[in-house]
Image (cartoon, rainbow, N blue to C red; front, side, top):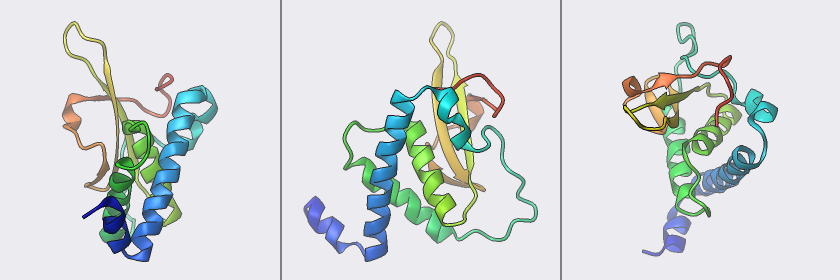
Amino acid sequence: MSKLQSFLALDGAERIATFEAMGLLLYARLLVAMVPPRRWRSRFGSIGCASPRGGREAVDLGTVRRMRLAVMRALRNVPGAPNCLPQALAARWMLERRGIASDLYIGTQRAPGDHPRFHAWLKVGEEWVTGICDEGEYALFSTGDAEVA
């Protein structure tokens, strides 16, 4: 089945979410690549630690998973293969539009003698949205840390 046939087989809401993800991925990629972080970092929201989950109502995991799939579909169809930070930002913005809070994590991993490896991932509770990794291998940044990206 061709990409077009696969896309047309999706329901209307999935097609719209895919277009939304494509637009937000491109926007996030340009933002990260061309604008100094100090000018846009405030758009991250909180980073580095999970938000309190105690009193929050149940999250619609179906919507979270649809947003994850929309981002994955969009990644196969946008130029330049956006890395983990634009993916996490785009997914976060999509979830926020639907009233779903998420946790953005940005961390660094350093192997002996190597340069640090940065990574960003997004979760809703224990549900992964983007950037699946072994979280224990990363030292997390917090909102007050030095510039990221």
